[in-house]
Length: 448
Image (cartoon, rainbow, N blue to C red):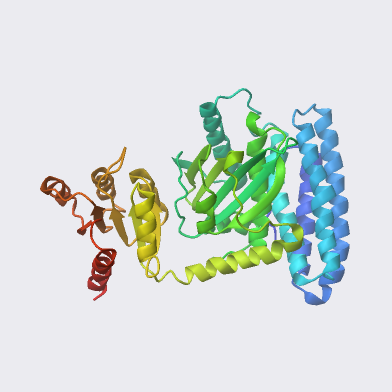
């Protein structure tokens, strides 16, 4: 764990009574973080520190609520509910975990990381909103207008929270693989038992550069502490977005999961909003699904199992990355049957990713650069020739080897693609073993 929660001037919102207590809470957290590294003092310090932190958090909430009421702040009720959830649910659950574990190192780390993540997220989203630093709630938006508003709010929040300029890369993100991805799922429910599903997908390095650095971290590897802090900061990021959507009125978090890429792909169906951004420090995606798309995936994360589940998740990610010596293949084909067949044929020896369109394939090239592309010739909207033209026109992609994998055998089709320098031309009618033999032979030749 980093040994300090890094205070920045932008945490000040310009209201003295609030800013003073924010600095006090950060200071308390920093003392707890420092003492947590001294094993002989951990239990006593956390017992006293928990009470001290709670006292000041409650004092801060009360003063903040008085101030919001005094200025007739429109978001008072929703803001107060967030305070209530933290003081009535989050803190008591963390306290129980500490007591039941006899103040174990894991429980102490969990308490500190949750409080740190909550402080970062709440200070830079809800608290800043008190002074009008973020957009007001939207009303009566059409779906297209709502998506545009979400894009603007996300860009605004990323700038406020992390001082990064988020640039929209695609408004049709299709669950393409990130290089080192974290796939976080939140399920919200309202009083009518209607559900809403939101995914936040991050390049690991982006969380390290943002939440990790705010916690004084210098590691290039995700830890359980940074992951738990990130969860709480991200939840508040998402809830700030949902507060602005008429369609998300009255929804509260019911469940959360950390997913593998394979689990993410299985539950990613017909998103109503699916946005991909580049921050310069890494990519992230925001995806919202309607209730009918809900599918079970990943263990539910609650206070009692959060440390174990996060640790297992990061361990699984590391084990998967240990296999990254495998060559990466990207299949671009609009046929589910072909994509599945190629994954089954090649998945044992290669890291295989599938994209269902030419544009999705281009996103895959950006997010997770492959060693070889298998490209279908005939696809709707953007066919294989157009896709290869785009690949060759981008300097970063121009030298990526591409094999056409197609049913087209006419001379005209083959002649048309020759100027684009494909590495080979494989027929779907070939025996699967022959297709694999050609691909294996290509890589042997390259490394030989």
